[in-house]
Image (cartoon, rainbow, N blue to C red; front, side, top):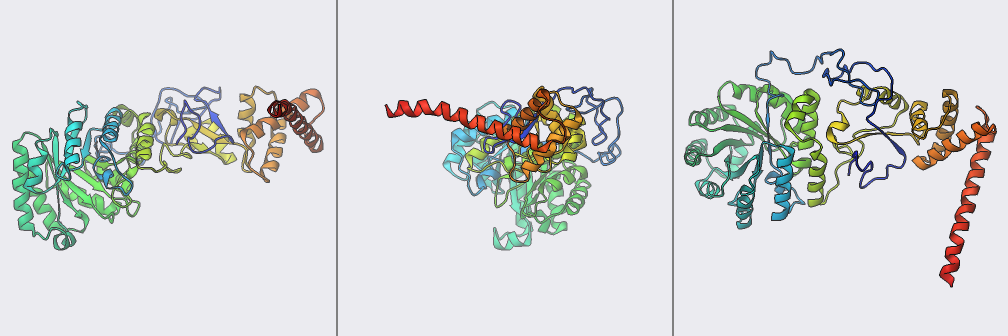
Length: 485
């Protein structure tokens, strides 16, 4: 479903009109990467990152921002809890175990599971995953209710995530409880879970439509009795980055425990809001693979990783097994019967595909000109599409060199004009482009062709097509006779 160094092709889309660009030195001097300012210890024309001179990114986190956790965070991966609420989702035990093992291999710090109180199978699955001996911690998500808590603590989980709605909408139309009842019950449940020696998080639901005084009051109360984390939830996806920053920063000033945030993506803000939450002092981000969850889901694991990699690639590479991301997304996509979106960060079909001539020239000289992410860090490669009307001669020159053909720049520009002419009628596949280049090269070598001789090139291409048609006919004729016999 996305390009890889081993496949070189998308599982669902034909890449025949594209050229893979190897991650090798092409011998050109390149400028220092001034985009993210991170040195990588080498310079070459394919990956184009230089450590000779570091240019500081003015938008990168500053040391003076002492609450900023962009380079000090943990992921609570909720595909096996929030993801089960996705419209297409049905995970049997085998699939849940496969997803849990893949997430653990990727390196997430926590995996959150559906409440064992939801069903007997949910309870059995929770117990089975707890027995796998994974490196990450296993959490389960429950209502703020003693019956749920008693079931949860018996499953073997490392922690319990407790949640209850605090907005006027949920207090009136969902559970019907007032803040006094919510606070009293939260204290009872938290103390019970703590008595079992495991982690406990308390989260409000629909936090951004809750009264601020109510929120800060209950967060201070649970912080004083020793929760590991308090959680903020943008349950309906209504918050924007400024609102997230202000609430997290305010909360950071009144509690000493960690802060988790759960962000729905109804308005497309989930990744931006997650990043902003870390800037304001949040410590834990909830994610799901491909963002699956209730309605349009929550912060996607891959998108968040891409965002945080751009801010501090070395930190993210040290935390997570990035080449595993493609495998995890394909696994979950298959399980819920969806495709990885073409525009998906990192693993989407188009993520590292370059088309415009100006882009292709720069990418061939130094990929940092048009890439903030290095595909090789994710086990992927970049592609340059060349069989189209927007192609440039530098991209064609790269293909000429790959085919070991000898053409001058003037000749390459001439044959590029022919490719663009044909691409005005239809996009040329890579085989089509290779044929044009080989016929052109043969004509130059034999003396039958010179720069600017359009009619001669048309004749040579026509003769090649006719010869290829005759050859196919001669090959197919004996097969027809044998079939008739």
